[in-house]
Image (cartoon, rainbow, N blue to C red; front, side, top):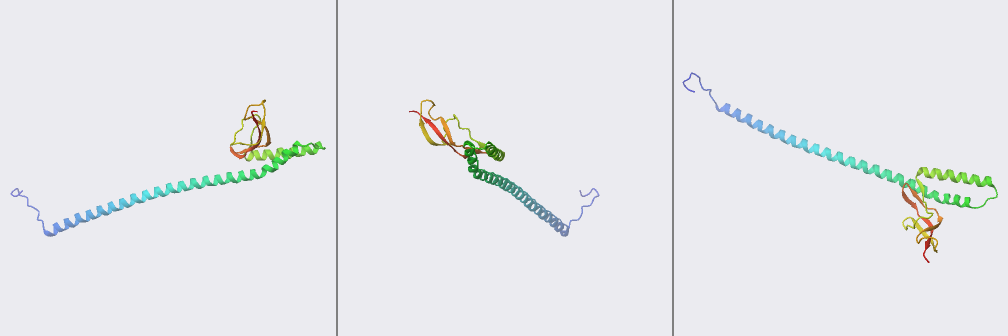
Length: 177
């Protein structure tokens, strides 16, 4: 206010130029900060995506490895089934030496228990209903003594491996006359 004894500061072109340059510098700094913040956010997003992709990759390879191990075990057990079948047939035949028969039975039991520990499960077919997904009908016998579709006998035992069908049972099935 003129007249109150205070003097107005003198504003020069130089002062105005310095203020304008300072304002421009602040605006440039602000835009640089915004660009850096945008780049930071983009990098954070990229890191999160890469982490998620890596986790998915790790889980997928773990599952594939577990499936491969189970499949490899399943094939090993499948290769042993003919030997187990041979032991079953050997136990059903008469033998002159009871000690020899006892030895064969012990070997059979030991092998069967080892395969069970790996995941082998024998299929129970006696008196069950025929299921084409689990059984292979080798013979159909006309009878009135059993219900149609009932399994009367087993030619070859079926097995599961860890809950999955490993080998279908070969069976004799009752049929109505």
